[in-house]
Length: 448
Image 1: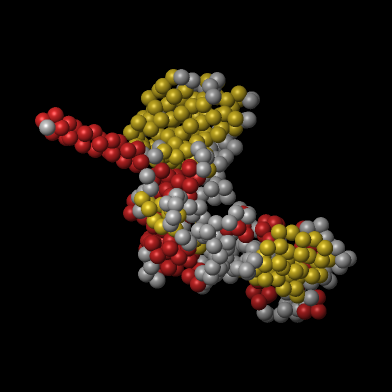
Image 2: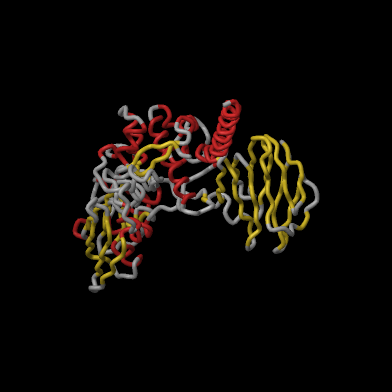
């Protein structure tokens, strides 16, 4: 009995120590984020220690890298070079160099093109095919603090804190699912994975990350992480994942979304105008005279069939059609083509003069391009002179009419609508309610 009495406390202490180690490991889960959004294809980069203590490992040599230290990496000819603390440049012969974090701090990364981002954690740099590949090695929760405010907004904390919490859980789930699929690295690109902008964007949204620390969405039966997909604005109806990526998913199904109606400014309702000749030439046709839309049950366009005046027909997928006119790299506004949730209308030549109607308002929004090139004092702006909403008007008229596309929403529409979540939060719903509405057959669980 005495032997048992003495061993029990030791056993409990060992178990407690194991739990603490596991908990610490969970909190310190590291994420490898390839920086392609802001720093992709970088030829020259300067890294400065903003605060904290780091160690620079270069060609098997470790160098102390504390607050105020700097590192420049570039190339001479096709040879990579490095420079430490404003010393002499030296040829880099290794495969990679790393800046390890010893004491929590931040690193400021600059490029000659005036791009500047601050990151927590450490960095790994590899010279590949004439440019530096840069990877941020960061704690998973710190990573989320650079995701949530740029996927949504720190300003939403004023009246939409619960939406930020829902976004934190969805983003954390996305990361967990990504990791479990065997992918060791995630990118900072919103076009590939989740938008991530490091410490630059940290703010009020960090509280939502902390309030939901470790929480993820899991399947109600298997308790495995789900694909917690999301987009900016559903347009009033979410989309089935199968209709976007061809993979059925019981957690991301199509349903009416009343919370995304009447919110979101320009992404709630948008309009795009394009001339029949320009529309045709974009897809290898003559001036288009007729359009037919094949739609999914949600109302999103599955495919677009165009016929020109010569009887030629071209059919393209809805997403392909959108990409032809999407305002890549431009500010989002109501006069733009933002998604495949739209209707099409043709304005024939006989309705050429619109006078002071909505078209005049559209042309006025173009500024000098619309007024000086498309406006005639006697009868108002002419439809025949429109090229497109993005290109403005021309000096020459065309007799083939124009097409007006009126749409709703922004993004693929699968899963959570960020604007819908914000509206739900404003109406008093908590983040559990928001996640329950947008994801089917799913539960919130504390991740391990």
